[in-house]
Image (cartoon, rainbow over all chains, first blue to last red; front, side, top):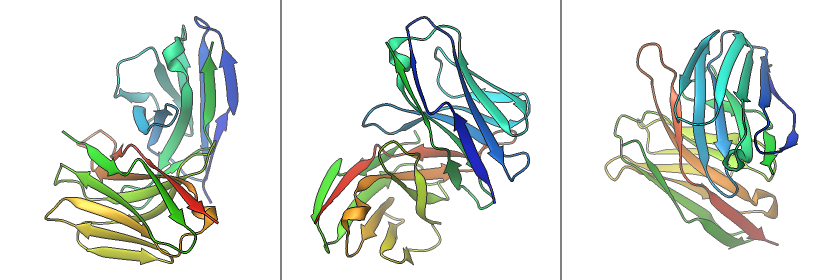
Length: 112
Length: 116
C-alpha cells in the first residue's frame, strides 16, 4: 500500500533563516505530488505541484520554492523565512482514481 | 474563476443528530467533488467523493447530495457522533491541461462539533 511521509513534524525557525521540508511517497511510482499550506483555521492553499522529476509548477508567487530530485521525493524550501510563512504544510499525492489526493501528516512551521 | 464556497463556517450538533454542510461551485467543468475530514494536527483524509453524473452517494453514515443545476453539493452525516467532531472540507477538481496536474480547489472548511 502507498504511504506518504513528511519530515519534520514540527519546526520553529527565526525570521530570515532557511527552510527545507521533505516529503516522500512509498508504494507508487511517478506520482503527481503537491504542496499545500494551511493557515490556522483556514482552508488549504495549493503552493506547488509536480508531475515528474525536475518538473515544478508554482501556483502562488511567494518566498518559497520546491524541487523534485527523485521520483518519490518532493522538497519545499526557502532561503529566508518570513513571519507570514508560518502555517501547516501538507504534502499530497494523486491516487489512481480520478481526482483523489492523499495527504501526509503535515509539518507545523512557526516562524518567530 | 475556480472557487468553491463552503458553509457554515462552524456547526454544533447534538449526538444522534444530522450534520449538513454545503458547498457551491462556479466552474461547471468540475468533474470530481470530494469531501475531506481533518482532525487537529493531522492531514486531511478523504471521506467520500462523487462524480457529477450521479445525484447522491452514500457510504455508511455519510452521504453526498449533488444538485447539478444549482451547482451545489452537500455532505450529510447521519447519527452524528462525538468522534465526528473535526473540520470538514469540500473540494472540486478538474483535469489539468496537457503537462499539468489535476488540481483540487478547496472550500474554506467547516468546524463540526458533536455534543455528547
